[in-house]
Length: 249
Image (cartoon, rainbow, N blue to C red; front, side, top):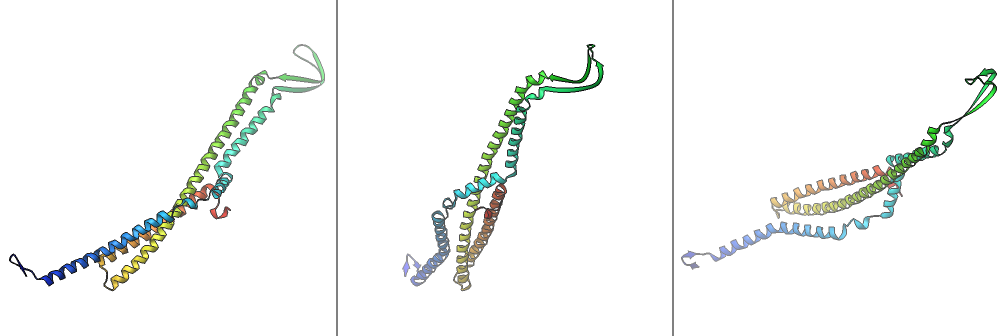
């Protein structure tokens, strides 16, 4: 067939067009499979991998209670409160410290500075007026020290509770991420085996096989990172609680 001086072979043209279409379909197959995989995995994550349903607030309350019982700094603050309370009680009970009762025994007659003669047992009562004046101030100071110690303990109790909550939520987050990464690793491994099988039969290109092999290796590294994040988050939470999470019922 000739069109404006051009000699066109229709069967050859159709063959070349068909080959081009098949090559395009073959190249787009890998992209289509990956797109479906990513889309399906995204829907799965949104539908199934929310960490909110996995949270246990009764268990969280047990973690907070255990942390307040075991964490050393919490114990130290409570001891400061007890020490301040002890000082206050001692200040209240020392009202008679400014009275001093003394007894003297003279077996023979003695002469005092006033030329008075004393013999036998003499009893004397001394009053420290300086202590009497300072006593209300000392008691007030002790009360303030007790109040400061109690407020410090209360403040740290709130801080400790917040830290336990944050670390618990972080730990649950890492568990959810681990589940997602684990499922992704399973899916990519299955797809990689299919592509490898097709490549060995000559039905898949080296480029597509290499891409999926790299992606499979990357996903395995992500899985290892997710496992490490879970262990670190668990360890930081147990640091505050003072026990293994498995020991808390």
